[in-house]
Length: 210
Length: 210
DNA sequence: GTCTATATATGGATAGAC
DNA sequence: GTCTATCCATATATAGAC
Picture: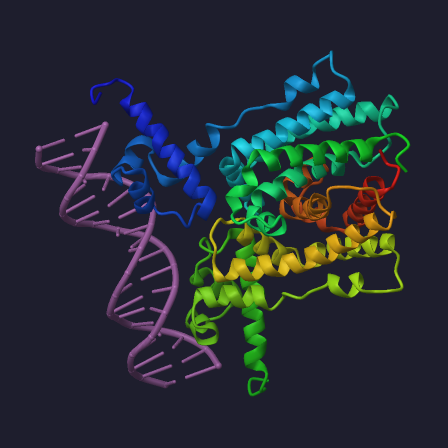
């Protein structure tokens, strides 16, 4: 096994996994390479060897999971406006549940008021997803399927619901009276959150809502 | 002036002001006492003198602005359920707009998955505000004023709207097509956000909404 | 109260042996 | 590819002069 050609790639991935967890839990500056090396069971020199530096490791953590998910749904001609929104809402919740550590990192990065190479990439990426969703809503309003609402803030609300739940799981678990923050990421809450997002879209966008 | 008795208190406040800004923009670990001392135009030793340590300064920054705001509204007997929610929504937006740096710090602190003395205090504090708002909604549902909704996630939605807008102002300013993130905190957006929160409450809680 | 100088620790990065 | 030992920068904190 030690002679396996892919052993390097595997170790690389293992380092990225541990790094993602640590950066999510403590933030970039608070994590030391020594701590990382210990938890990943590697030598400190390996970070330089595989990634060059701590900062490049951080970038690698972020970049490996950046994919566009809304484009496909938005341009599907066989779905109604309602179906598109509900599908995107579900996907959005799923993304936060299955990749919560990653989401924590990118939103914390965006929350820092520094304009860096990384934040620019992230903001750009989010903006693409954003445009897809707001395009659906705008089109729906034009065609009378939806009520006239504040489009930008409506999309931001969907993001906010999911993000607040997942990024402040400590607060959420107190509110929901669960024992630990990890309980918030069970299927029970995943379903509940999806229902609430759909309920939000329905009540908020229904033509005769107000 | 140099002999003024309050010069110490003034300097203390000045340090706290600068610290609040820096911690909000860069995070606790990323801010050094040297940088802080430079920006606050004080000597590095003054942080130890006034606060003891960097961590105690951080605590002082957080503790000086923790006040309960929802209790008064929730227990006001002269307001309808609708009025209470709208007032709380307005207050909530105002709190984020006038004290955005502070809000940034406390939500980032809560987002870190570390249980510390500080996060416990913060979560407890947020929970009090939370209980007041959810109490109003629960009571309104019982009395038939509101539709039956997911109470916890409805309150979380109000928090999420405001928080996402204010904590991710870099993203928001791209979406709103403004030049800088600071433009997001103008009266124009304050009004717009308040309208949207009220619109959310109305459409979401109206008895015959769905 | 304010400063300089310094003790002490820790972190990132790498040279060089294996 | 992996490790140890080490360099160097930077950080917090404080002792002690003024």
